[in-house]
Length: 334
Image (cartoon, rainbow, N blue to C red):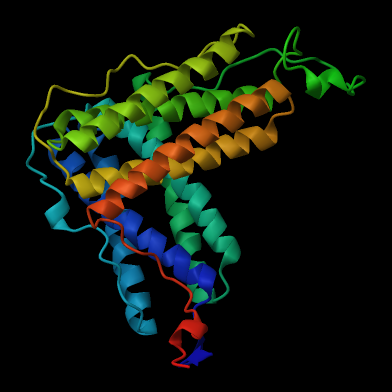
């Protein structure tokens, strides 16, 4: 089907644009609050840059949906944020949060670009991908200048090419294990750091919400993140590999909520969904079976947490339904 001179959006394009709209509308609310509270003159321009990106994305997707005569998602609005609420997070947290935002953007837009058909949609996602890379580099450069960048571990590796000679290269679950591969160590590092940032975010959310159910949910997430950090850092420590850590607690003593409970719940669910993807990638990249076992049970735990969060959102009428394929049988009156 064609609309004017353009082909109809395919399922992947609709899904990518819809998800991007909701996530960017959430980011607009979040970053407006950050921008209103940031104190560091070097951090502020990066927060502003990220906010401008999200605002531009919302505008562009709105135009695409209007052109296609598709309903524009409700997403999140000014009703979901109080930009004048007291500061809840430190400026250093903003940088760690934005770096994670850049990494997630690179992953999401790469997938959306690979599934897009129309040239205008490919151009859009290509631009988003480039902007995410630019944001990631801006944050990384500033963190390095400030001495707060948390690098992947530096390790010594063999100086010659080798080949695997024994099948127990993969099979050791108990007893003596072979040393970690660099790719395995890299995923353990990355998943530790994302949990550290996520724990900070959830601590703030749990601190400011007035709803007991949501407060309990948030601090349950804090406990899960802490447990996962311990598992990952223990695996690194067993190899005498330095664990990632930050010197910043990330959260202030603020108690006034800058965001609606709806936004905070969606924020947590979406980040946890991305976390499951990170764990799955770590599992695929790892050849040691003890790592597979760990990732498998952690994915199950986070999956249950996401499901419980989704149930809370549905119960409160906060779960906006993504575009759904029409079941033509249900339209029949026979």
